Length: 112
Image 1 (tube, one colour):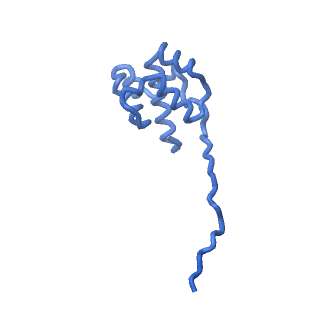
Image 2 (spheres, helix red, strand yellow):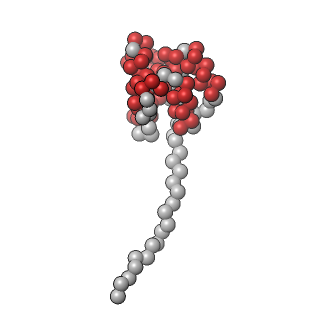
Image 3 (tube, one colour):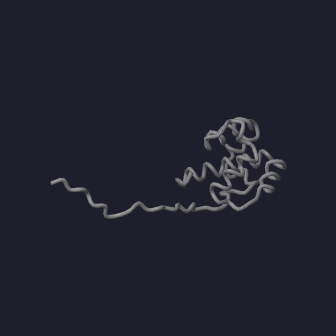
């Protein structure tokens, strides 16, 4: 007598809500993490590579508008492509530092 196991429950779809649908720090909030600020000021390309590495992207993508837009979309942060463009165009260092600070804070909260 060969009995088949009876399935008692079906697989469910689980929707994970991100806890913080906004930037963790403001664009000009450089002093909240001086290490990131110094790295962004004196070694901009290194910080861009760190951001790209955190997001599993090409090193050259880190300081771009596209990376900021992808990150913002992934975490449901309100904004627009035009806003991303102006943030990166007008203040690339601040924009990249904000992105890295946000990644670090989300890692600390366990939601990155």
